[in-house]
Amino acid sequence: MSASSDITTHVARKRHQCSWCAEHIQAGENYARYRWWHNDDVGTCRLHIECVAAMREHAAEEGGWSEFETGDNPRGCRCGFDANCDNPRCVARMAAEDEPQAT
Image (cartoon, rainbow, N blue to C red; front, top):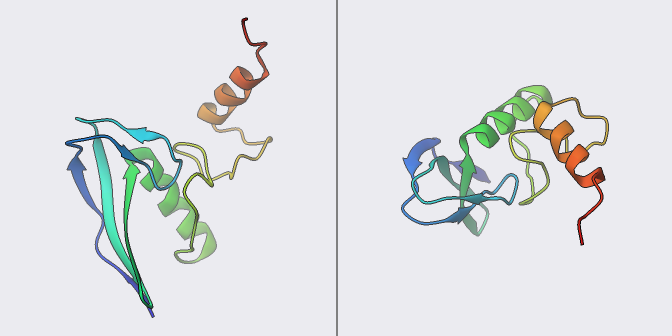
């Protein structure tokens, strides 16, 4: 059986890793947090504010909550790193990845 706590907002006292995008949540930054239980497993999810919004959009689109792995999606998006994503943050990330690296 699965269950989770309510999502609450906190100010980070130390650096955390976002459970959605795997980027860091810096000390002093607002973030969302919830606890989950599934059979014998228990965990805490910490997410950027924009990542929890993307997670909620994904849940609404899928008709309910679904499991995800840390880093499955880019920050603030639910595209799963789809190359055709038109989210401005994803477009900027893809453009930066296409830039030649300075040596």
